[in-house]
Image (cartoon, rainbow, N blue to C red; front, top):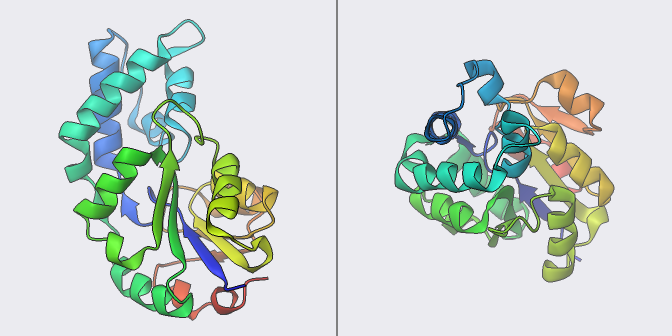
Length: 218
């Protein structure tokens, strides 16, 4: 079975901070909530959106309303405020070759927004498929999403790699038997990624195609 590469989106292929922070601020303002410090909002990059709003709003907060307001902002403005990291397109071109086209997007972002992002930034030609969470919340847990992808795409976990910038990516890969690679140019620290079980770390996007584990995942 051919090897397969799964790539996270936010913090791995794109820097989504302006849009995510703008969406969070807009939602919290509309709900009459205090806006946390920027460092607190940056922690929203990586986790499922409902997890983030549950933390921001507390147990009594209306999480679904927060998600609705946030997504309304992202749909109108947030997508355009993100940016592809330098070196990503060059890396994707080599990765598509190394994996014989079996490169997939694997993100906790809602499927419609994941597809819109891939199309907006010209990522789609490098990808065999785009997988995200369902709008209602199914597959927001990346471990469940990867398990779904394994069945849908005939992925051999022993010959598959997950690249992401947060602990959630590493844990999800490990749970499904994939090689977990941490992207240090994103929002997770070296300690976070290693503590979550990363098999290896990459400092920049250009390090990805040069890494031995890409052609022969362990």
